[in-house]
Length: 606
Image (cartoon, rainbow, N blue to C red; front, side, top):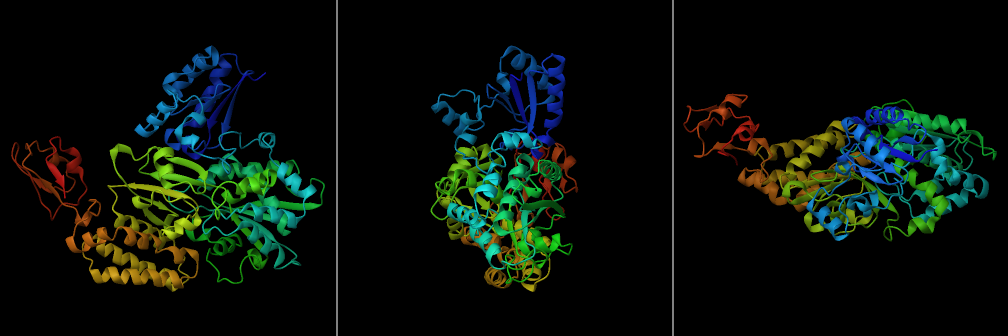
């Protein structure tokens, strides 16, 4: 009889830190102690707190271990599993002053369960409900937590129209970008062309935003939820075939998704006559090559068809002519992950969370200058301050918060003045950003906002498919102007022209990629115009990031140790031993090696 379960994260982040080798070592050590029949090691999906991986939880105690290594395995087994004494040094401890104060107020010295950590206490896990809880490669575990009950209910108790009504009443909006109402999308796909001989259900798992890994983690930790939801969508719109379009750079997600599809077919939860109801539905995987534009629905469908991933003019919309010119519905992974729970718990349950126009929860990939990087799921309407300071643990190294970038290359930068704005679709658009798929990158005082805008625009230029002139040419001209400014060669006229070009691209580009490409530029111009002006008029980068505007100088504090000269990669520093050294500004490549090597703090960055 199993008396103890050891859950260990099998997401991409922890796997890269050898979590699967740790799991194997645990099983070996447990067997050596004669406990193989009493203790079970479970490889789960992502727990969310990626900054502290590999993560391990021992049940029934709920002991929450983090940053576990292979060397820790013998001690965990001998002390905790054999003697019942948790290994204190590995148990979660606060990683910031804010977390420490919060746990102290709650009377918690060391967190012995997830709910005792500030990172998890403020979250509401719906889409991530099963991630880190079940083995994603075992369909029986998914069924054991209520899996496929929603599909059974839909097929045996509800009409397709009733399913659509429930999804509509829940207020669920698409979690992949613009937030289009999911129920309305399904209704259009069902009703626009009722007599179609074939319809399709597609899942967007391309997830091309820099820093985003929400969909990947759901597929790695709970793939059956997406399969079940796609089958429900198929029943609702009258489709018999589904496709999951997932980027090939997600090997673990692809592997587990294929295992889940095979298991669902074996259990007759995909295929012919599901639940004996006469409903047929199957799913296949299509791999993407990492093109950002294939996150746009028509480009994605064009790619599935075997063509170059380019967007198509709309109308007609996919609900009328989508994949293979047949009526189709497309939602992203996170959107589908909510569907089974909405069906089982009712639309009122889902609508009770969030705000008036943005119901439910939202998953964010929290990254950048933040203590707790990882996956966060919070009710819509949660403030940015709560996410960054309370869940994220604040900005490390005593630095000040400067901005948060949401929505990836299509989004914008949110300054400190909007930290207390409730995050939902409409509020983010109102302050010059957008929800996007859920990437949330935090920046501190050391970030240059002009450089940030340039970074995202470089990405967009590289990812443009080139089909329309406003995106193909316009974004390149925009990048040229930005580059000119970061090199100290810009003029105020350039700033004016850049703003005009931004609006031209937004109004004339063919698809969402081009239409939203100027957003990072417009939002930084809106909130950080003073930095642009400093680059143009003062020829300085206030954050000291833009290399062409940075200058390294040696002060009188120099002791003439020669270490800076010996380490300079281009020989730009000269001087005799025990005498003041000098940097040749014409040779200096602004690499900062001299600053890093000076033991006397005699080198300054201006």
